[in-house]
Image 1 (cartoon, protein in one colour):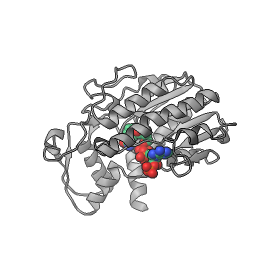
Image 2 (cartoon, rainbow, N blue to C red):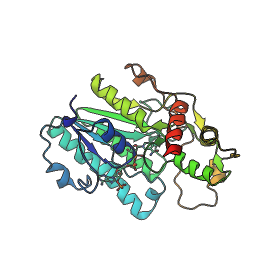
Image 3 (cartoon, rainbow, N blue to C red):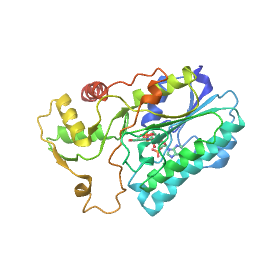
Length: 284
Ligand SMILES: NC(=O)c1ccc[n+]([C@@H]2O[C@H](COP(=O)([O-])OP(=O)(O)OC[C@H]3O[C@@H](n4cnc5c(N)ncnc54)[C@H](OP(=O)(O)O)[C@@H]3O)[C@@H](O)[C@H]2O)c1
């Protein structure tokens, strides 16, 4: 696989940044260079020589999508724009790699398998589920469902590290359970599927290791960072009880990884990547 055959969409986000680092010779664009919600900017692009579109673009503000403006924006980026990319891919014999989420499920099945029926709870989740259906129509596609992404950008680990540095002992939800997915892991999985030419279709991808709640993950973060702080458990319902405009969140986010493991991919334990991530963050 040659980097020059790759086009990275949404290149400045957490995943986009990691993909650019992995494939330095790839073409890439974020919203300023190519707004994928504009049909003509996707259709009129010169796709010659491109064999892979890696779509890291998304509207990812889960609560923002519950607002009147956010709902429209989320549908545009997460569903309508995906149909433009799929059309361009189909017309130019390009393989599409698209990223989805455990939020397309209501969080009752544990763990989530690739063939679980869609049951999204909130607006963001519904738009992502629509994107999944659209990507499924691309003749050559990898639809990767992931959870709790951590990379270069605003994310849970960074938020907790900031609280820890200020000496804050936080109250954190303890009834949402899943696994972190470092962008390094997601990039490894994408590269694995492309280079091994795995069968097209849907794959779950997250780090491996024992699933944990956000509260337990916070304890791991504080331990790795050397912060002597207390984390108090709270239920999701209690945490959000006085807050308006909050999206419903699935409680069980763990993804079953056996399908991608069967292709020869070995997930890295999330605790191992977390330790390395925190070391890097604290030395920056
Ligand atoms: N973050 C998570 O915890 C999580 C969990 C499960 C799945 N996922 C999925 O994983 C993927 C990557 O997530 P991420 O955390 O890397 O997201 P992210 O950091 O929010 O990055 C998304 C990128 O897409 C860009 N974008 C937005 N609208 C666009 C448009 N119209 N045209 C082109 N680019 C546009 C954004 O630009 P602006 O910043 O300028 O808007 C941003 O650079 C997404 O599909 C997401 O749904 C994420």
